[in-house]
Image (cartoon, rainbow, N blue to C red; front, side):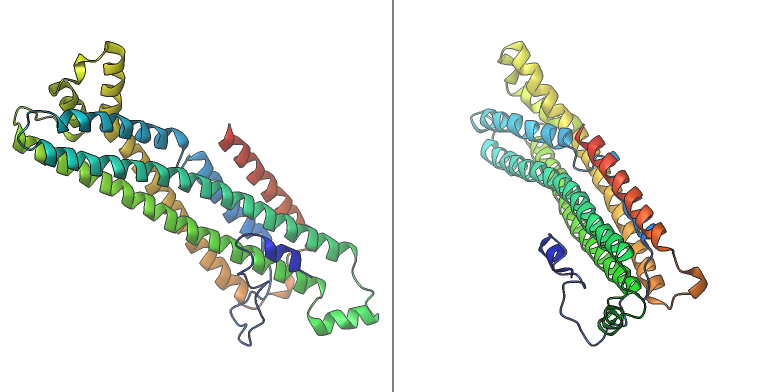
Length: 310
């Protein structure tokens, strides 16, 4: 019954599409879509509103990478004693800046993709539940008997849909955490590159004592970059001076995203443990509450996606 959804990204490896395994004690015994939608919506809203991997940060780092390429040429053909060594260090820095910018862009795209995938899975789950609500088999019919034997009662359909949504969401979390950790490492490497360049510059010329935040701009001025037309010079100087700032901004956004994702992971583990325990009969969530919570969750995700694209 769920075959079509198995073609969606991230869903094919979930419990709903997997071959049944004898040990199913880890599967949920009941569904809690309201709590799942709350965790999902609040987390994605935080990631989208926090603009993790936002385009302007990656764009500024990429612009600074281009400006560094011009600086490499100045250094390579300067009269500095260690001009080749310094130019090589700057080349490594520029390459890492390019990798960092691409990684931030990719992270932002994956956040958007995870939201789209969650909306697709949730929408399908809602349709399955609505269909089960609108077309229940008569209580004493052969269809009802078949449903009992094959595990396709209304309640079990809800639990299966919940397991699929929960698994797909958990997979999204892990993939986003991995991507965020890659971006964080790239940003740390960029800082290490800048430290190496500064050490080489200080050894070469003690008169360039600028901090890392001003280092590349100071080198640009020292080596004659200010001989270019004024507008061109000021533009490149500002890019080089601003690189450290944009790196720190991007670093802060990625760290915040990782914290959010790790909290989300913990919330999902708590939810998974809770629904794996036997359900209290009097605490069963009504069918219409599941449907309403999914509808509200879809609306919140859609609104967050629209805001992120503005």
